[in-house]
Image (cartoon, rainbow, N blue to C red; front, top):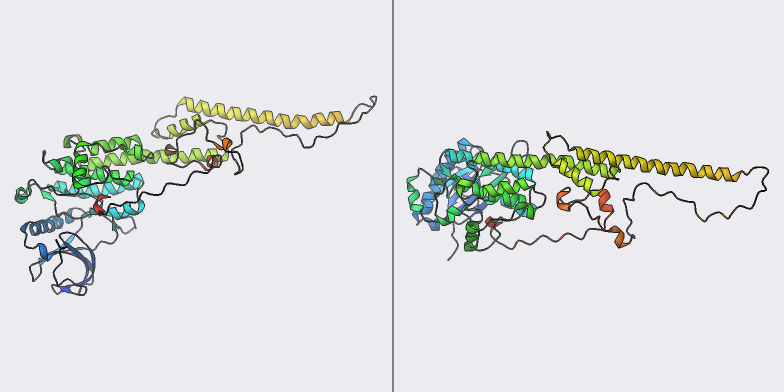
Length: 455
């Protein structure tokens, strides 16, 4: 079966309807191509989506294309996070086209392919914007049904921040659309991000199917891998329907347990057990990100104390207590035990320092006393001087090691906090110097899956 080809009139430099000059191909798919173009008189740039001429014999693609134009025109007025439609028409050879705003940037699939995983605060921001687009669609009874990274476009606002635009309403379902019955029994979407009811047809597909997909997109962006892995369509469908994804924190230890709970609710098999609105979902994720951000703000202070030696006498257990304390909400008072441990640690350091100072002060005095014997005592020959000056043991253990130190002395302490919970996988500089050089990082797994949609 040959690949679909666009109508012969679509070449760079061609003018559509006497108004738009085509400049370059921006992308394409099974239904058509998207061209960059410029208005001849107004000079502004647009994107023009045109159906492939080879599929014009089928009524369904054309009806879906026209439905997309209608929905995007209506929803683009309701939210700036939905691509705005400027014009819709039919070329002289009967091929329909759609004129839209020209977006500059990249889709989330491209961003994730490059960066692999995003910070939870960034994920929360993107999901919040995506939720606004979905809230506008759901308010008008429209279910997108194909939420995935490739349909979440990232452009920039006037301040240079990421601005989300939801793309492709070609398979959207309007609850009140009488033509929906013609699509009954069809599986439309991308299996990695489809809700179980979309795959089985056992339950009505409503806006909560989009929320399941948002949970799957969130999982991919924050965890670094798809919730249900990769495979054929049948394999993916089986996993979505019958399996639970791995807990996010088991894959990315930097994520808190509250994010695990968030994903569990997002991706519940039953629609009634999920979040019931896009705003509810976005607010819940923002709360999780704020909790993690509060802890991340306090943890560097502990590392700074370690680096300056102010906490050098505290053991690994006290550091763990401090990290646990940083996870508490800001309004909670710190546990008395942590304050006591800190006071005892500082007191121990002060006493040890005083003993060291006493040793330093008393030894020279002893040498001065023996150096001047009484006149009535006959001086005797002094013993031979030691080969090196006596040294005073430091009150605190050494915190650095050279490269020539024995391997046994560079092993990590038995109670050292796990790497994944301290600074998201990085030890503080002073601790890092006390350990052996970390083994080289494992190379990133090469993504051999050639489908852009199934990152």
